[in-house]
Image (cartoon, rainbow, N blue to C red; front, top):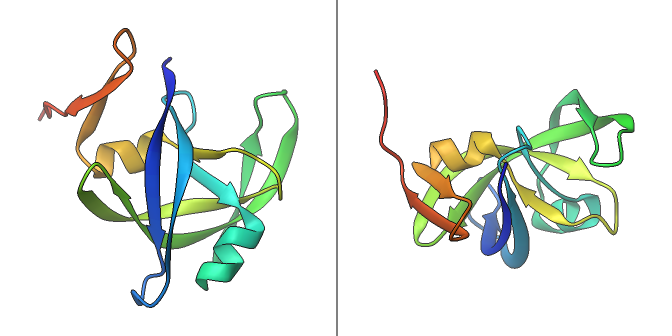
Length: 117
C-alpha cells in the first residue's frame, strides 16, 4: 500500500462546477472519497449506497455519486464516496486505474499503468 498526496480536480458530470483539492493517493482504498459538503457544492448527487471500512476500522454506509476526476492532466468519470465533513479526500484504486496510473510507493509518484490482458 502507498499513500501520498496529489492535487485532485473534481468536476460535476455536466461540467458546470469544479474544485481542486489536495487528496491522498491511497492504494488501499477501493474508491475515491470527498467530503459530503464539497460534493454537494459541486452538484454531485447520490446514485447508490455502499459499505466502506474506514481507516480506523469503522464500517459505515455512504452515498456514492459520479464526478469527473482529473489528476496530473488526465481525466475520467469515476465513482466517488460522500465522506464525513472533515475527512481527508482520497483518490482510490478505481479512479487511479481509470486514469491509467499505477503507484510507485517508494518514490511517492504516479506512473503510467502497464495494462495486463
